[in-house]
Image (cartoon, rainbow, N blue to C red; front, side, top):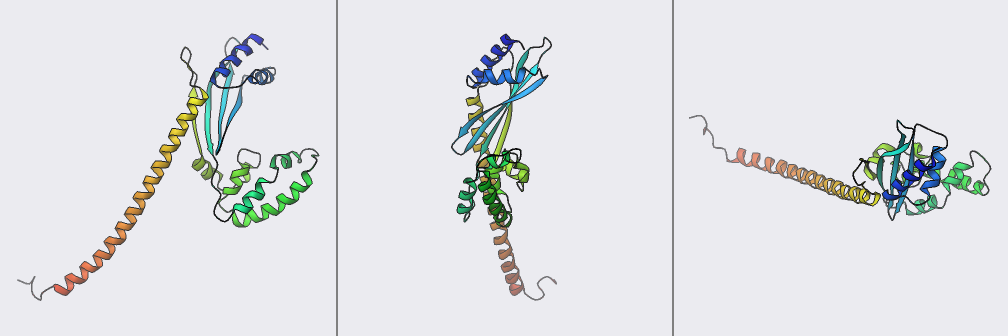
Length: 230
């Protein structure tokens, strides 16, 4: 492991927005000498998180460098009406501790398992769309158990890859986050516009259908015998 290379890479990642701990994390990856690896940096948000997955690879001279990162803006879906109590109960379960108990003994996980069994039974009845499970299981080992996972991700996640071009200032994490926030707003505006157009077309179609019926009745009632026989 080339310590100078790790120090240089750490400095570069700190310029992107990583904290000082990135140096130790890079060493933990590089000591195994992989051809490439990805390291995650997460920025918590009030309504979700923004994740940055940095792709590092070994070059021709055996030195590591960061080639690009993928930024993922994740928004927490709203709690469906009438499910606030169930959502609070889900939040009271330590799902990570319960998952760890699958592999080894974890103190206090027995109570979590009993609560989880009851809650999952309720979820199977009322959370057909998977929204509540997505709120707590997305990004964990339980993610694949979320119904409609692909649909929910398309609705509540937005991603973009940013390349680190040599000799050009890199796009920092905070800049990438603002870019994704702008795209998220654009996505919401377009969705609202499409819904408005859809509703207007439906209303217009209903009005046209009613108007057409009235017009047909008036035409038949006002038609004069022999008018078109001349």
